[in-house]
Length: 173
Image (cartoon, rainbow, N blue to C red; front, side, top):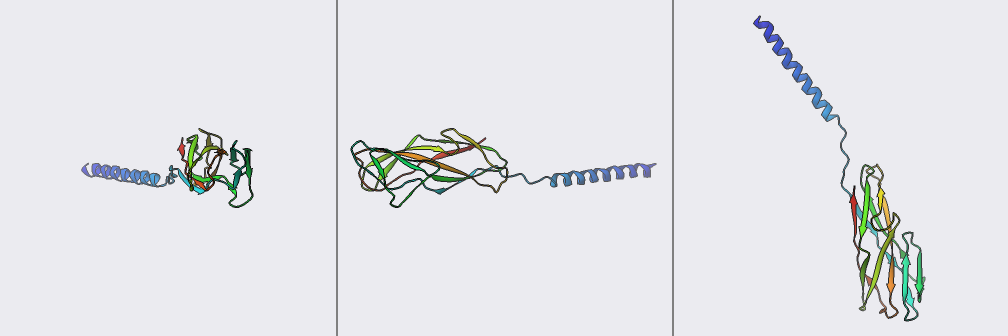
C-alpha cells in the first residue's frame, strides 16, 4: 500500500510539473507588447519667406499647413529665398491610438535688429487647438503633422530676420 501511495504522489508531482511547464510555455508564447510611448520629432521649421511692408497699415503673412503663402494689408510677398514652408513634426505611436494636440495661441518672434513680431500658431492639417487624430497601427509608421501660422506685421516693424520658438503638446489617449 505504501508503494501505491508513493506512485500517486509522484504522479501528482509530475502532473503539476507538466502543468507548470505548459503554463510557462503559454506565458512565453505571448507576443511582445508594442511600445506605448509617443515619439515626436520636429523635422522642418516654419518659414514665412521674404516680404516687405509698403505702408504704416501693416498686415499679415499667412503660411498654411500646406505651405501656401498669402498676405493681407500692405504686405508684399517677394519670391527671394528663403521660401515659405510649414513646420513639420513626425509623430510615432503604436496601436493606432489617438493623439490630441494643444498649443498656445501666439508666440513672440525677436528680430536681429531689435523689435518683435507676433506669430499666431496654426492651424495644423489635423485641425486647430485640441484637435485629435489617430496614428497608424504599425509601430514603424510615422504620422506627419504640418503646422502653419500667421505673422502679424506692424507697418512700423524693424526690417531684419525674426526668429523664435513655439511649443505644441502631444498627448495620447
